[in-house]
Image (cartoon, rainbow, N blue to C red; front, side):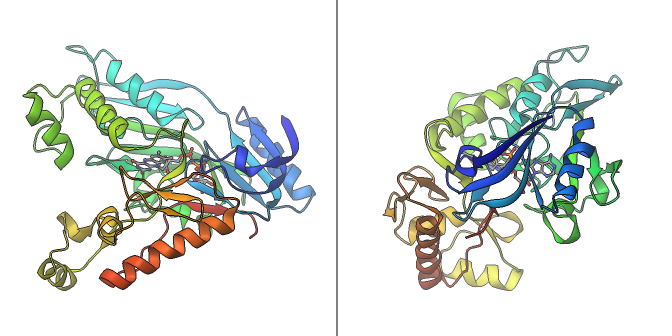
Length: 343
Ligand SMILES: Cc1cc2nc3c(=O)[nH]c(=O)nc-3n(C[C@H](O)[C@H](O)[C@H](O)COP(=O)(O)OP(=O)(O)OC[C@H]3O[C@@H](n4cnc5c(N)ncnc54)[C@H](O)[C@@H]3O)c2cc1C
């Protein structure tokens, strides 16, 4: 087990902000988990789990505790029948590698199993996917998640949990709410995928992509390639731009509120969803620079750290966006990424 001391959180997270963590431990095998939690217990320090750090913002005061960085790897077929397959991935694998694996598997008639192809190119690890129930282009992990294996650091044992025990909904699960926060280290994830391909109608921008090109065969690989191309055109590449993806959650309205919004020409999609990116753009902020942060000129929901000096700059930029949207539309935006450390 590798233990490092005084490591900058900015080097472990894609927003590239944050002070030092006292200890960082790489979790390379399941057996490292008990040892790492024991190490933290002995020192009476809190722990924090990190995958790729693409949905976590580091604060300036650093973290007087132990960060467990997930380096568990391996993808296995655990069960299959003529119609479906179960794939189990260790939680430190990249979600995109699991998608790539699934669309290339021979299914007895053709290549590819369907169920996670629209999640292509979402940055981050497999283990983080159930935490906020990642989703994109009409799919979310909840639709295919079968089960997870977790290390429960309260009871000090591994447990198997079925998807319906995880309370998955939009950006929500037992792992990011209440007592579940920090209690479970997800060590592997099992998804159940199907041989049948997705059928139209697709998510609006994906459908437009297919219509423009006259695509009529929606193999998992075709959908993956389309999503990858659409994302490359509008989302900042984490290797080049420091961001945490969508910085704010979309807003969900009840029926009455949705009717009110429509009267004001605010777009309301299925399920009462108001795209927060639209609100930010129509509050006049798309492409604007705020305290060293840039509201992306391609996708206004994304805040890019161009040259923010610290977390305090990000906090000022966040407040400016929240205030502008509140003033123009009356809605209060809520931040999507988690935060780590002291201010
Ligand atoms: C450019 C960009 C685009 C993005 N696009 C999307 C998108 O389309 N859809 C979407 O849903 N998200 C998107 N995101 C957000 C991000 O990719 C996801 O939230 C992803 O699941 C985070 O994975 P990670 O490994 O980086 O998790 P981290 O950021 O390291 O962790 C996220 C949270 O999960 C917890 N966690 C991580 N691993 C485990 C584990 N093994 N066990 C228990 N808890 C754990 C952490 O403690 C933390 O609270 C995007 C981010 C970026 C930078």
